[in-house]
Length: 221
Ligand code: DX5
Ligand code: ZN
Image 1 (cartoon, rainbow, N blue to C red):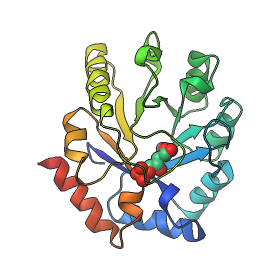
Image 2: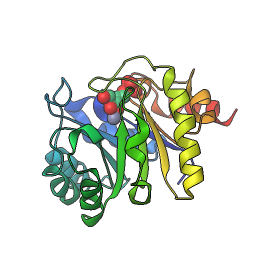
Image 3: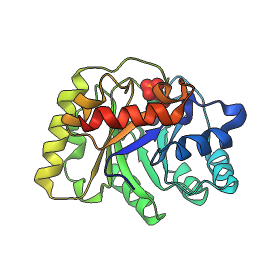
Image 4: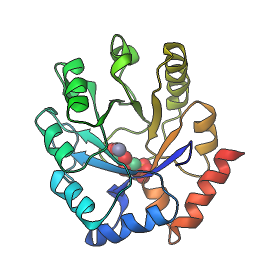
């Protein structure tokens, strides 16, 4: 597995042939599959649930599936997603009354656990729970839709979280989600991210290997 992970968001895939789409991005060099779960309550859109995650596993997908829960409440769905084959589960602090308990629930279900921050969500939610985190997901758009523009203030937030992770000494990945493309991925990596979600930038292109190679080349510069 690469040190820097490319995580195509299947929100921008062709859902009429999802298994094939996921096979294709993985064959093209993607590291993990980013799986956006929206409930038309926490965010103004409705997407996919555990059944679809399970279907991807049954289809033969073995790569890590990174489930980004944009739902409220979160806890009831966590065991379902773990059973369905999720590898990583992240949730938004606003969607859980007991953040520590939700993180522990994810870990007890055998998955890697993470907290997700909207652009306007303060970082104080990281206080006291760093030891329970495998990943921190920073949103660089407001959640709900693919194809939005990267919000520049996310770079400063990335730097702040990178410092907190380094100071903590814990092994926590730093993921960025929203508006990532070949023109900004270099600055995003320089700000401290190591896991890069990209939806429209990848699935909007005809050649997945070419765009993933381009994203990696930009990162390496
Ligand atoms: C937005 C989702 C993102 C989205 C990213 O709520 O969490 O994962 O699909 O799509 P792009 O890369 O097109 O901004
Ligand atoms: Zn996402």
